[in-house]
Image (cartoon, rainbow, N blue to C red):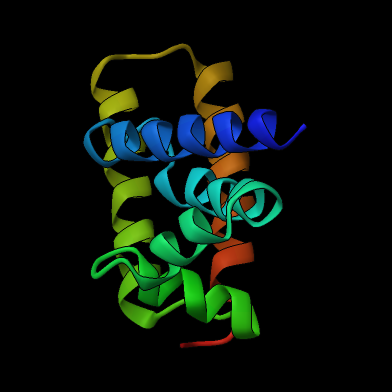
Length: 117
């Protein structure tokens, strides 16, 4: 079972990495999943993720107190606006825009109601 958790962890990190470059693929949820999977499979991989120079601070904040940094909140809000603007520019159907706005507003609400790191 440990190898399955480790495989899911590695796949989650890879998906998170791809999400850095693709605005439609969220990075942070995949990194949180990776942290979960690594916690069940490899203390070494879990520690690597938590001590990573770039990724670690935000993950530690989340693990310790469920907090999200103010900078991350602004970045996420900005990326949501950009993604929605791209959808409008590509003239997506109205029902797609409505679904997208409901999801984006729900995610925004969740993010902005978390404590600041």
